[in-house]
Length: 240
Image 1 (cartoon, rainbow, N blue to C red):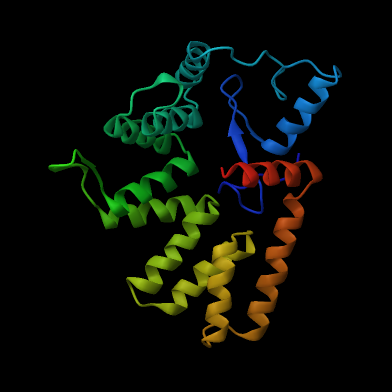
Image 2 (image 1 turned 90 degrees about the vertical axis):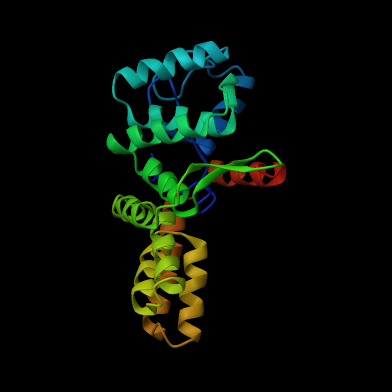
């Protein structure tokens, strides 16, 4: 029952959504359980609700649709991302992805707000080799609003992005560093690098940089376990 971050791979923690019970579990627990299953010490069941894992794509979507009927925000988020990647037999449909992510955000998904923010910050289009068809117009104002909501919800990456926007687009280093410090203290390594750059440039004091380093280490230590370290190494080895 260690803390689980919003951003994937933060401090080496990788998570996955369970369509049976709607819980988000870390890969450390899941991979450790697989070892016990192979030894015959555990049944091949969901670690949280103890029901059998889905055996087919149809089974996955039956469970997701059931979660969606229960207004599970992360179920909408899950299916929206499936339309982006075309996973589990779902057709790639970027407009449908955004529609589902907007619903997930409306229901309170911090992850969906962060994903939508990145979509609206960049815009979305399809290139068939001859013409580029715009699907989602760039909307910087909406993107910033969504990044702020995600950041207030605790999303470490969204907070760091607010720092990037303040630094490179608003030319406000004081506000940028405030965002970077908050993100770094939560364990976001890229934000910690930005705080280090700010210290060298004189935007961050020595004491503030030192306290941020300590907080970063404390956050990562709080989320660390042997199982999570093994899972992170396996993900890195496979290039995920």
